[in-house]
Image (tube, rainbow, N blue to C red):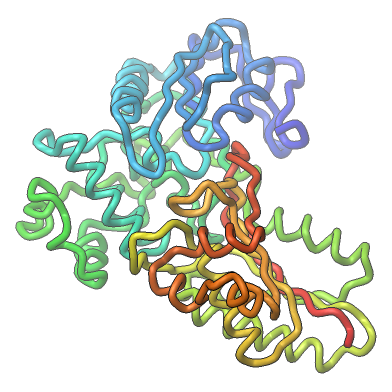
Length: 414
């Protein structure tokens, strides 16, 4: 925010673009997502004192600006504050006119943190159960958000539709694949690229319709979802969307540190959204090839994005720890001397309190000495307890941000 957003005279300057913040009659700010608190903290001093706002974040307890209405939304599943916040933000947005301005600070996690079901007969427990199915079925972020958009009063551009005809500016931190901005927090202020037919097809392809609560399942069985606003709709005639930070930025930061240390680097984004097993095999292959073509220097392969890791048991962990555990087994089996790290930039991996883990070719053998079978932990989706036993967890606590995951595999010269 400090490097890309500033005040110049009557204008807010964002990534070189200017927006007049003195002529609007009212300015309403909605901060939604894991990075809502720091984004709003940075933006508030740059706006007129008459601006008013809502902050919806997982833990906004440290935020005390009087102009903000504060909500503690749930994540990864919506809670009562998620629903109340969505209702409040929508009500304010619907009261805006062409003389007003709406600024949305948007970041990952917003899908659950600020949410209300579109069909009136879908209860909060049903909506939560729907989210639980999506989070645990192995769907990628794009698939999950296609489904969320079509069952939400606020997602898929519906918040923008409510705020029209006000001038609208969305500043967002991306936790989604490049070229998919409307997937950030399920795109409440952006045109939806997906359709109801996409939602039906996605749910059927994943085989999860039967697992939905009855109130939601019937919408898919009877094909009665409501369509979302699309690009070119008049609701977006006065809208602008600017990305402030994404997964590439965190990879570039990691890679700059590695280059400063004299490492030889390659980036591999081809595994994005792949199953953890396929991704681990592909990245280890890439590391082995790089090692073979480089003599006398440390080599590293970096990778970003998110992986698919369906929950197979009742253990604790997430896709990052599952990837590291799978990679550790492969390194041991293949006799490849290397170290692997994977972590979520939000500081929370799956249902565990860890961000991720680190392992090497000795991890499986060290675990066996402690009486732990790596394959057994993997089958029970219990990677957290495996790495806790080894002391190899990465624990940062919530970072207040989310720009997807980061992985790095390193091999030193033999």
